[in-house]
Image (cartoon, rainbow, N blue to C red; front, side, top):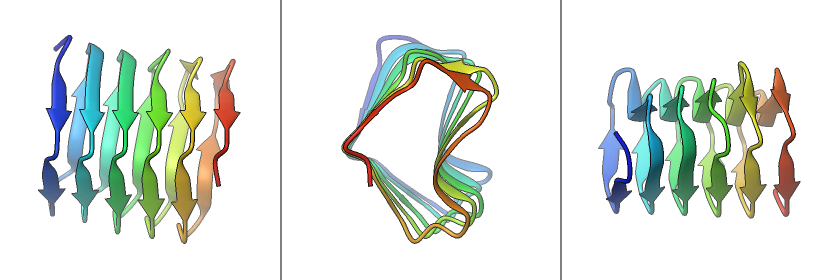
Length: 125
């Protein structure tokens, strides 16, 4: 999928993930809510994905998860009470831009970075 936008949607009790972006480019997810899944929003093998103003909470693992994905933007998102990390960027994901995100009350980590390179992070809590 490419050049698509998903706005003002809600995913509740979805298995395994609320929103999944897979082998995609140039997509935007904005002002969506994902709760009670494995991961709220999962971006895999994709690039230039923009997550703006989304909320994830009460997921069994991650609020936002990026794997094998490059050149993505997370801006103004909120991740609360997820069981692993609010925001996780791992598995060969490079050149992520995080600005103005909030990760609170997640069980293990607010923001988890593993096997990543060339990250920019500003104003995250």
